[in-house]
Image 1: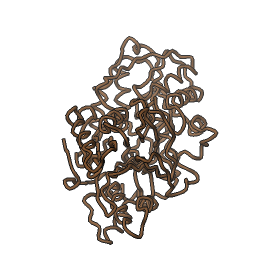
Image 2: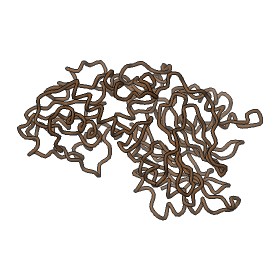
Image 3: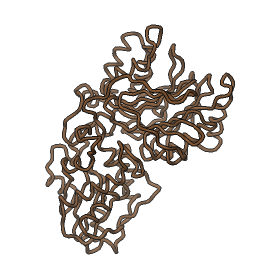
Image 4: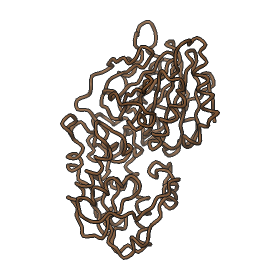
Length: 492
């Protein structure tokens, strides 16, 4: 475990493809405790490491470590952080503030040095920063800043943001944060802790969700998902708009723009498919409801005679409910999860993911044996863990296995914050559905069509063209040529 004031920090690389959770609170007597609770609610967004940073009005303190939130922060740790936030020296009469971050694993980066928030210093003062997303111009920014004399301690795009803010700080820039954000290209939902305020910002494309809330006693909250508001009893106020900076301080909530919203925007549809909690509202819709409707549409597109519908726990359960309802095939719980094993997609290596599947899932033979089963899952990314799941069903005596996936085939890499940045990682890249079916060892395989998925997620206020579907369609909202080169070379 690491307690670090600014001058003891070591900032280090964050590689391509990282999807995380961020949380911030201002005006609370116990900001570390509230941030801890918020990070627990966002645990599904990252299980590798976590961190909290707080301010006492003069200096920042942070605590980061590897593992789950409940393992990293014990009572003494939270008390130490809240004690710092409430020391009141130079901060008389004010309540404290803090930010937190959950990080999810990517291959080759499972080190405590990669845990966020990071802390930096410039003429504008200390700042702690936590980032959900991925920049596609990080290498370009880094080289330009190095040529100007900036020293980097990592290859992290998060450090590039800190260095860029430092570069803009000074008499010539009354708003260094806004000036820096205008130069970023890609996905970023940021929470930034200063000694007198918190600033939160969202990229002009709106890739990642970011919301504002308020507790009954007036503490101001920002979080990746609304479920983090629910767990601390805060009410939802609104989303942070694409291209907006929102300041949370003793003066309340203030807003300014660093850029107009992009046209069209690029909300990540994979949030609805997999990453967000079913209990959250994302992009204005309850995730559970959206996933059930995806399952209903999947049933209409791919009905097959069967004895039961089995959800693939846990993220396939919502879509399976909708599939069973629309198809009339009975819903059964035949695959029982071990609640103490994390989400397998975000394990750092193939070997760990396959082992996690074996530990995580137990088959109920009485439900499966001799039956024609429809297995509903939210997605197939690499395919290795899905094949392991299908092998378990065969061994339990399933007569037929009909695999149904509630999104289209993922054929293209993502450069905006999801950990599949190379085509070689994707089972659907360069393969037809029949080839994938044989590799997975199932009797039939059907993916939800792109048209069907967009029919479900679109609303009157958020039409289909405002969703990013690049991982399915290959149509990227912005140029990713440099990002692709960086991903392949292993840089940034």
